[in-house]
Image 1 (cartoon, rainbow, N blue to C red):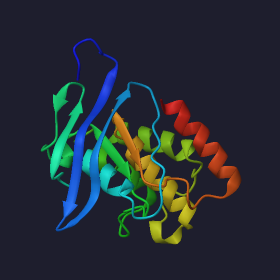
Image 2 (cartoon, rainbow, N blue to C red):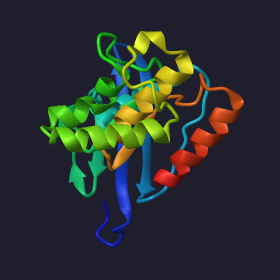
Image 3 (cartoon, rainbow, N blue to C red):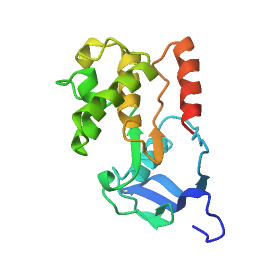
Image 4 (tube, rainbow, N blue to C red):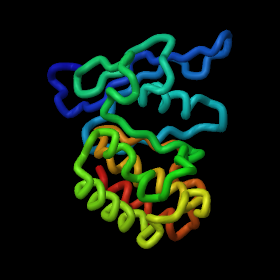
Length: 186
């Protein structure tokens, strides 16, 4: 990150990912200012998810750098980065309730139980799932599961929130509402 640009929170420099002979992401560079929203658009299979997985630390890049708040985090483990990712397939824990899924990251970070409970209740309201906290995730619709995944990511208050097609399984009205809620998070 350039010294003169203190508002840049994320900088991607020449990021490349190859799987054998196939290049999934080819020399991508960009910077993201604090409080801004960035969208990656392209056809299926063009590398959007791979790029997000590299930023989150779930996939190691072949080349390039990932800089968060001026620190090179390229080879940091996923749990050592101030990022959270919402996956297209939700990646929820089926043996846990909705509330347990949302509060999982907070519990791992050893937050007090009353703080976890308050944050889970706040997030259930935010994603309009009040009253469903005791249900198992497999009892929910696809759109509801997606909202649980979003709430779980938001519980960590990450510096960078990575969303892989976060609104794809929501009905039109909820999609508009969630788009607004995501904008408010900036």
